[in-house]
Image (cartoon, rainbow, N blue to C red; front, top):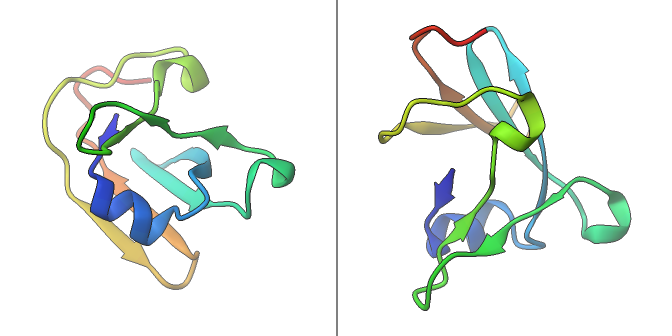
Length: 88
């Protein structure tokens, strides 16, 4: 998964997050730094975009493509809705 530098700095300023799979939706929750646990976003390119290998977490691939992420104040994280497309 790739996250733009601007979105990463805005939503995940510590470059750490938790990722959950809920009802065909990825939920990305920011954490308060490496000491709080979670996964580290890695810098992908010179523009500062970040990346995360989602298959490492869930053991299945998410089809390549662009997905819309929506901030959900009720959970304090980003929701990324995915179509079924054979995902578990």
